[in-house]
Amino acid sequence: KVLIRERKQGRDDISKVRSESSARGSTTVKNTIDYIENDESQAKPSPDSTLLELHTWARNRFPLLDADYLVQKQVKEATSVVAAQVSENKFENAAAVMAAIIQEPVVDAEILNEIRASFEALILESQEESHEGAMARRFLSYIVLSYGRPLPRELFTWAQLRGSEAMAQLCQIESFRHGLAPHVVAGLSRASSLNITARFNMLAALDLIAQSPEWPSPPLSRRQIACALYDALEQEASRTGGQDEQLIIELIGRLADTSHPEAPILFAVLADHHPKEAVRKQAHLNAAKLKAKIALAGESP
Image: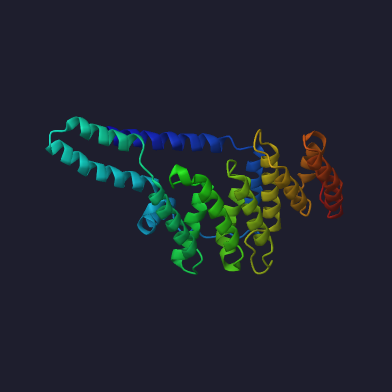
């Protein structure tokens, strides 16, 4: 009972942290969300399932990808050992076995390899044109945007890298882009702790989505793509640590090809204040270019 209560409190604490983190989102991100929601031309993908349904589906199909499942399995195995120890009146040994499992579940190399294989099976299933394939794509996106959770901690970084790479590859298939587009935008512009290589993979996925035909209904409108790039650039340039100069330069170049009305202002700030000379130069070159483009299109920054 104590273990169940502590785990419930842990989940409540995590939910509280996530809620507070979301509440601290910048005004620009909120404005961008409104900007997208007010865009009548946007594609509105229908949800494949609720989050609860998604977790239920995943636990039934890929139980090894759930760290809680591993804990429950090991506690069950430990209970058998404890019962045997108790039957032999070895109460101290029994307590030690259970305490060790509760404090630090064992995830050895063999189990990690099994989890990797299960994750590859998820990626394989995500390539299917079916309901199961759609669920697999959604769960794959969930894992990436959750920074590798609910896999064991030892695989957090690997799951982000492999999962984001798979998402970019899936975006090569036009029929998958509508379902993946919201997750790609979130990964690029909202998931602030996503691994840098995974962020590059998200940018590659967005590039593929941007190539979709305008008719009859693109996965993302041009305005939505512009907003995603703007948010991603603002987020990357605002990092206090872990900034990637090359990603900033790539984002500046792509944003310069849009008509986001606030982009020239952001470029000007970067041109004047960013510590990296290459970033300042790229921002300066594109600020005037984009300002002229917006003026020519009849929009005012």
